[in-house]
Amino acid sequence: MNTASEVPTLHSVTRRRAKPQGLVRFSAALLGLCLLLTGCGKEEVFQVTDEATANAMVSVLISKGIPAEKKVVSDGVWSIRVDEAEFPTAIDILDWYGLPEKKFPGIDDFYKKSGLVSTPGEEQARYMHTISQQLAETIVLINGVIDARVQVVLPENNPVSNTQEPASASVFIKYRRMSSVENMIPEIKEMVANSVEGLTYQKVSVSTFPSVEWASLEVSDFQNRVSFMGIEVYADSLTALKTLFFVQFCIIFLFALLCVYLIWRLQQKSSSPETPEPASTDEEEAVPSETASS
Image (cartoon, rainbow, N blue to C red):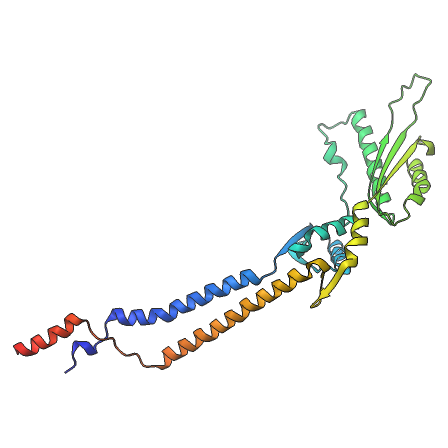
């Protein structure tokens, strides 16, 4: 006759089955923590709507030793992403190369029509803005020019007056220091003068400004880059990168050992037969008393 001590209780069986499940949950949580610690974060630099511009930006960054990638965010939109540590340098490089290309606002963004018929002042403002924008877009196409702005002034001359005020134009150019933009100033002035009616060569002023930020960065920082495991880094960051790789390796190695141990424990538990736990002391004392009474 089976006694109560030979029958496993529901609580004991549930408790034994809950232990492997708890180990699996703990293993999954530890795996997520390791992936969070060892994962390299990516930072978005720009979003562009032209794939050719995205390819040019990635090509420039890779040529300067910065790993970059492009991803499709949505239909017709590409995202340029780099490592978080390389984000400031990537911004400086792309700005020095004039990427992405500047998008000039349209005339409707400044002078929106409020009625069916435009006033003479509105028409003149539209004309000056259109000429200025087209000239700026043309100047940006010159090799070495990062950005350009053109301001054309057409004075309102009185038709009954004998004196006529001449038109004038001012050109702003931001260029790369090692380019030959300054030698092209006469050609730029001639192009602007010939594009506006009543504008003479002498009334065109051109102001050029070199991009000095990137000049110092290119001379000093990129000469101090070294290669570590196929990754180009700054020489003063090599020690920190090696330490980071060592810590990540230790975390992954310890996690692998823990996974092996947990798998071994689960196999041991599944292969060994389940032995029922002995009944409580009260049940053991109750059995002899029942036998004695019988």
